[in-house]
Image (tube, rainbow, N blue to C red; front, side, top):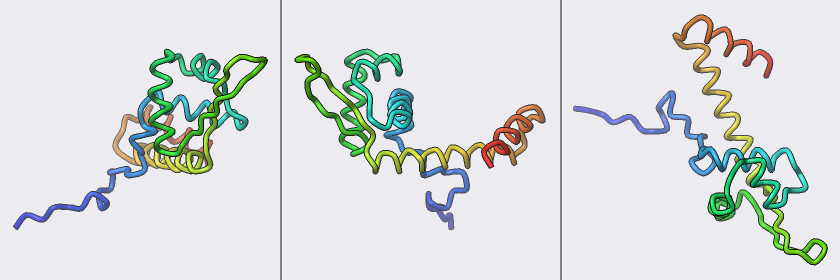
Length: 129
């Protein structure tokens, strides 16, 4: 009789790699917002993440639906301005995501990797401790 292992039991399943965050553009957006507590204007965020207006809008909608960012539309010197900020739940999700990535690195360092790669990963992990 074949028994299926439950996903949560998989040693390297990395359930903390949230699909919403894991996409490259959204990871860039959240990283930018994490480093700017007051938020960023749409144009600043677009430049920092090297995205087009359409791509940034689409990814911000995904993050907003997931309650990870808030988008505030207002005025600055009589010109429309959109400011994006990371939310408290977004900040927690992002930090949990980073913890999972750190676990991936620790797991890779303990596995059978080339000696040079293992040394680099060990040095990185030691610098984080």
